[in-house]
Amino acid sequence: MSLAYPLDDPRTEHPASPLTQALDRMGVTMRFRRDAEIYAQDDEAEFLYRVVSGVVRTTRFAADGRRQVGDFYYAGDLFGLEPGPEHQFAAEALTDCEIQVLRRTAVRALSGDAELDRAILEATRRQLERMQAHVLLLGRKGAREKVAGFLMAMAQRRAASIAELPMTRQDIADYLGLTIETVSRTITQLQSEAVVEFPSQRRFTIKRFDVMEELAA
Amino acid sequence: MSLAYPLDDPRTEHPASPLTQALDRMGVTMRFRRDAEIYAQDDEAEFLYRVVSGVVRTTRFAADGRRQVGDFYYAGDLFGLEPGPEHQFAAEALTDCEIQVLRRTAVRALSGDAELDRAILEATRRQLERMQAHVLLLGRKGAREKVAGFLMAMAQRRAASIAELPMTRQDIADYLGLTIETVSRTITQLQSEAVVEFPSQRRFTIKRFDVMEELAA
DNA sequence: CGGTTAATTGAACGCATTCAACACGAGTGG
DNA sequence: CCACTCGTGTTGAATGCGTTCAATTAACCG
Image 1 (cartoon, rainbow over the protein chains, first blue to last red):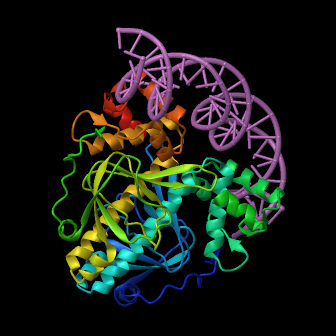
Image 2: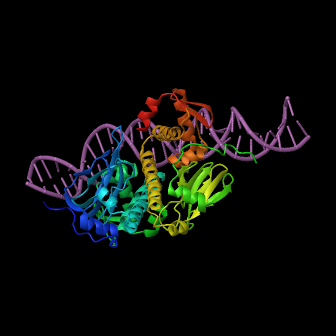
Image 3: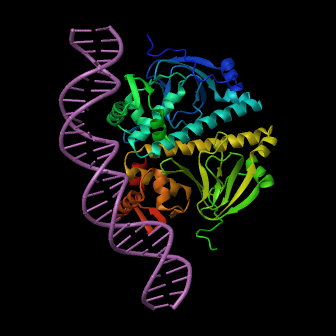
């Protein structure tokens, strides 16, 4: 079983919050292989999850079969914070990954620890912020703007000058509310305009940051 | 100065949470007239807000001048919970309204009150839930589905069989990532199919719940 | 090497947009 | 009462962009 992407992924080094500590102490680390389901849509929201390595995506299927990708989570990110008793989105392993899992009731038992509560609130706030950014992206009219916005966000996740896309074009399309063909065409177009460069299908660098910023603004 | 909509709006009766109590005790009630700005995009996020009466919308302007409507808030709803030090969206009075305002530092000073923290977390969770629903709406392909989804959500806010739309077609369009013309045409079409009925431009009832549910699913 | 999935490219279509004109209601003043 | 205005909403016709369907190419892995 060889991994498509390295498991150790020292991206955003989150500080050792009480929540991280609680997960380390009381959480169980589980492994999922590519495309395995971590939890299902409409499952009880009874656990809290943290990505140790790999990448996770959340998805929701509409009645007509269309799929909406909610978000992508990288090492250090918390997910499963969705409100309500049931998950609105399913969570799947985009790549093979390690996930720390903690029962919510365990968090609640630890409560009274105001710092822990605050850590969860902060994580929820971050999640909200990302959803707002997603709304902004989806609200954009043009495919160029959507794709550019997505690539900019992906590039920002990486400190390195070259960014990787662990997800397929289909994932990107379902995230942006477009089709694979449109995503592909748009990327090709941005390349031909020397705005971005794709040395391979899943790796890219931004050549004209100004143009991209303008599109993603 | 006559109001377009009644100020007393006993819709969702939120329970008297610690947060509500704190707002009642320490909050200041302010009045805004239609289209007045409650806070600006990129303002410091230093207050917490609660709608007493009237309706509020949050908006964000892109660099190209396009406007994205983030959400609509009714009596009892909390807003201004956005993460980060700055507001991602501006808040404006959609109708004349009364707003209770509470300094965040005041909330923080009251903290240690675990119940209060939990109330804020719950409000943030609800906000997140609404953003997720918004992402789902925006991700939909067709204008029919978007408009139907919006009308369903608006109808659910009202217990009454007849629902009101305090916002303009432009607001709806900017919320759904469409144009006013498309919103108008779609509504006309739904009417001609006897799926919804608009006795006036701002009031409607759903005639074929099954069809609407199918579209909004 | 095949075999399979992912990604790109091409051509025709369809839906939302754009630009423009018109309708409607509320408020104002003759 | 009518005429006028302004904001809001509806309707029409032509355009354009993303989609759809289809075929081809590229990448990955046995």
